[in-house]
Image (cartoon, rainbow, N blue to C red):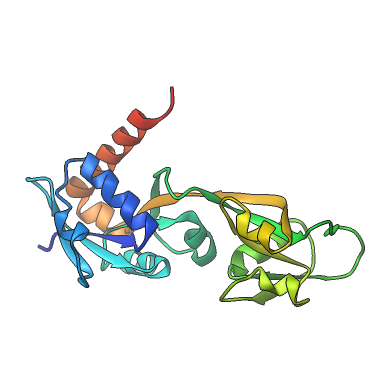
Length: 216
């Protein structure tokens, strides 16, 4: 039987995840010295696992389809993509938020015209405004979404915000925080049933570390 596979979102979440695994006693030297390899072993001396490095959307796809048993991915990706899997823990790192931002000084909610919203996160944006019973036109942007209102393409944007510096430097301001985001631990449904004896202790270890790190 192959080792348990855990898909990690490349970049900051990968770094924070590896730091967490090291706290659990896992030797992550292969990942820290990965070169161009994308599948790497980690071990705590008793349990062998494989780390798979992938883009956020692919982490969800790999876990949902069972080629990876566990994944670490941002809540933003989960909200946008949906999917069938268990979301078992908020890992507490990668914190940011979805926000609605407009050109500084603009009253977004005044008037009765249909607003145009630019975002990389079309499904999240649609659900937000459906909940408000507002009709909006959504424009999907793949790059720097801040450009859309500057160029007159949209009235506002929905995007991930951490410090808000990029918004401010481009003449935009947050008018509403929409949802908090952080890294989440997700598990394939079949894996949790078929390999419960391997996965449950790993989840428990993580939960215990998170409890220890909670502010008192």
